[in-house]
Length: 184
Image (cartoon, rainbow, N blue to C red; front, side, top):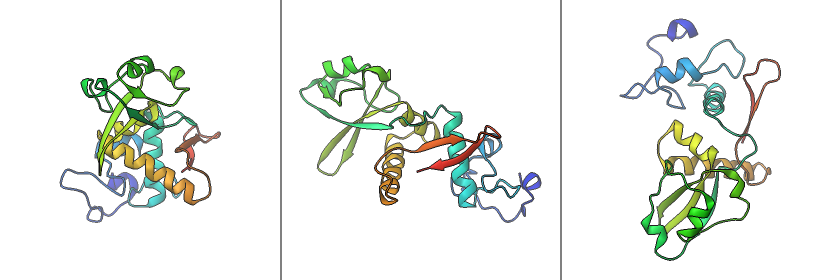
């Protein structure tokens, strides 16, 4: 990596496990998904532009669906919710969730399988329905809490920039097919 990118071999700092840069890519992830997002000829995970572009490339490569939501808030009633498995790796139909007391926004029936997420927050539990893009985030880090923080931070940044509370959008470049822009 230091040879290919022209880096000082004593310069890059890593975690004890080998994770590198602002996005904490492992070496194998660097080789597969790191991109030169600022166009200077180097993939530099310590540069915020390349780091953000590399994470976006990772998401796109793992099936990110542009323009689709990440998660939807839900509520639980009755004892059925406590009886079913929860987590980013669960997969339920909207009808099965409703049968188990999960109350959700309408319009999710055409979205396919949904994961049921329960987060332990101050004052009790929050229930969320993780959609395809939520699952993509968990490919980067296998934690429902991590994925939810990424989602909510993206919404907060988007709202602060006056873009409304939406989801992260990835758009490939028309010229190269690689990611050309990341809208948060």
